[in-house]
Image 1: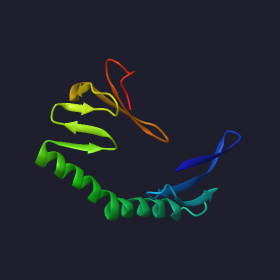
Image 2: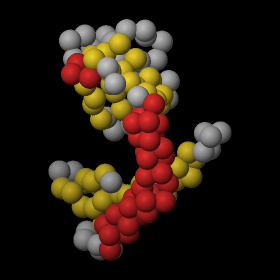
Image 3: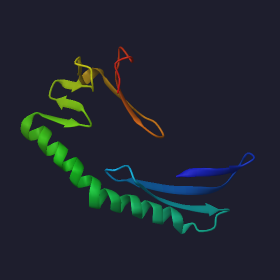
Image 4: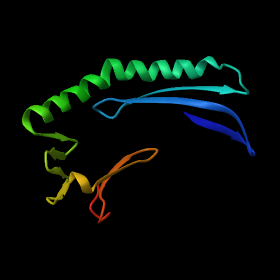
Length: 121
């Protein structure tokens, strides 16, 4: 959800959800609310996000967690996680869990070493 700003005033909200398949095709869902109209869009957006989590993401997360807890390690997008820490893509240095830092950005997610941000993915 993004705010729609005219000059210095917030006049609405834009809600967007994008799905990407394995071939990088995208399905975009976009709807807006201006000047307090369509306040039900907040609830619609929340319901869609909850359904996506419940119907798709929760099973994926549960499978990764099961793999990690049962085998002591798992791999997600080329990043190896084990009981001692993580090993980033194309970097063989293990980062211990107490040195792992994550940062959420608008379009991506970053993982890096607390003491050396040059070690990142």
